[in-house]
Length: 491
Image (tube, rainbow, N blue to C red):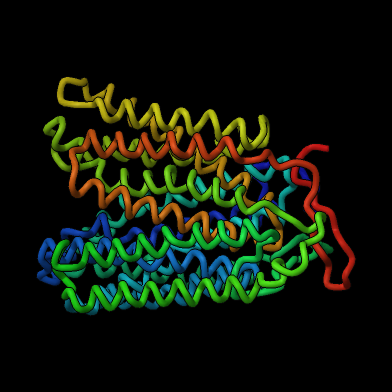
């Protein structure tokens, strides 16, 4: 049961209060997660770091987020968004403070690695918002949550350097970082006090098992195992970037040990999947309780191309504009920020279009636009006028972020009690995409980089043809054994 009150963005009661507090919590997680990039030069000078060490910190900042999103998704389904989001905000303020007072590279690296965990906050709100909004408003609500929360990274870029200058001196950056930690700590308590997992009278459906995602057919069991491989491969790729072949921070022996550890972890993970799902090999799941894992797999691929490319492009676009058009770093940064600004309207727009015209048709159009957008970006060179390049970047950004909104308009309609786990896996694929694209960027020209993203978007379009439009209802079982039907589309 979701609340039937009117969707009024200016209201701060009922379901709208939950939506506003959710995007604020997500916004703060992104401010904390991305508080390093705008203060990078100050940190480098203050701690006397090399360029290789700074690059390593940037890699470490995203490394932990891949497994963290999966784990946080599971915890959210089991313990509820209120407890998990509050806990994440409070606990992650600790490594934020650690980074602010670090004196050397090792301390900074440990703190930055731990802070990757806060990047998993996004997953929690996806489940929470899905509990409070009916299917015909869900895309819009999730889009507002994702788009406005995501803006935290741009807000950090705009405000933190100013705050650091206000405090002044060599330690200005420490105060700026510390303030983001205080925000996270305090809002954790505000969130816990003001949010509930479901509207009054509604049931919060929990998965039967915490250890692994449930599937409902033998084919889906093997597809799940296949879809887990890229997440481990991305972590191996990060290890390779730290090896002598990359930035040469870790020795070959350490990197090989990490590879071995990842293989063992995958096997352990697979054994959990078997333990949770082995009954499907002997007795089929009743039709009423089935869901198709291919829906999850398609959304994973699409989020790889959308959010993965956004993370990669946001980090390289200022340099791209600076080098292509010989702009000063400040001007290049301002011009490139137009890409991130699109989040405020594009992601809610993608969700709204999904509510209005259906999940699959919207995704098909946006994915096609995404491929064309990046292909056009690949043709940008110094012969272009700067304003034309900015318009191309903003148009491309519209399709990227609307696509993200449309992906997460579909995620909560697959299986309610597993929404956190599904959102966790799909969200992790976004980070996998970022790792892959940034690795590609390190060894090719800018134009090739954009063409590669366009190519993966075409691949996403092809996989999308296999997706089925959510329709009718999904079944969930109450604790007393009764079955409740949840609408996922217009009757």
